[in-house]
Amino acid sequence: MAIISHSAATGSRNSSSATHGYESLHTRAGMLQRDILLNNLIVNEDNDNPSWPAFLIDLDLAIKEQREKSSGARGKTGTRAFMAIGVLLDDEQHSYMHDLEFFFWVLFWICIHYDGPQEARIVPRFDKWNYLDLEKLAGAKKGVVDDERDFLKTAQTNFTPYYQPLLPYVNKLRRKVFPNGKRWRSPNPQLYLDMKQIL
Image 1: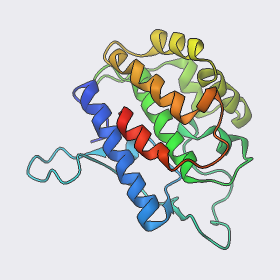
Image 2: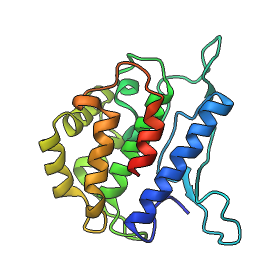
Image 3: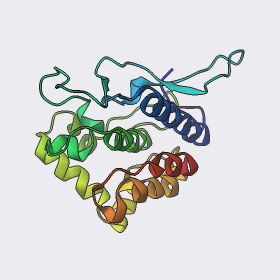
Image 4: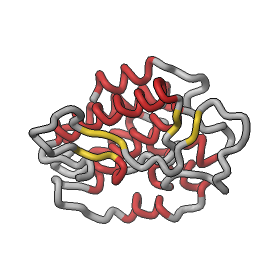
């Protein structure tokens, strides 16, 4: 089952567990996933096997972080709505920091599009992210995260009642992923721990 849960708190814990799984993929295997999206974050509902409450699947677009040649993938990789701003603008080589930003966008998307585990909804302002021109999408995402007051207004207006309790945590996550409302400029290994503590 995808990461959407029977409670907002459980969804937050599942996001933290999936982030931990990604950290292991990156730091132990040296891999970048490059396509973190809602359906690639899975909740383990088997109570007899609680080894991982949530985990990451689908490594079709994954690459070794330390590589000598290009991945062979044509164009940008990832699902548009969840892609990191730097990837959309194509001005940075893909790094684990982009993958961690994907997690932020997935959680943001869940809070807007789901009013409980089985209650999805369409929100045109954000659904168009799936087909918007990449530069325009990067600009739209910057507009969401660059100013805290604007972010809070957007979240208060668009988060479903079910996920409204996560708003302060998603905002704390925004502050860490986008320091001072900006894209990160240098890798920050501490971001793993920061994200897990917030979630």
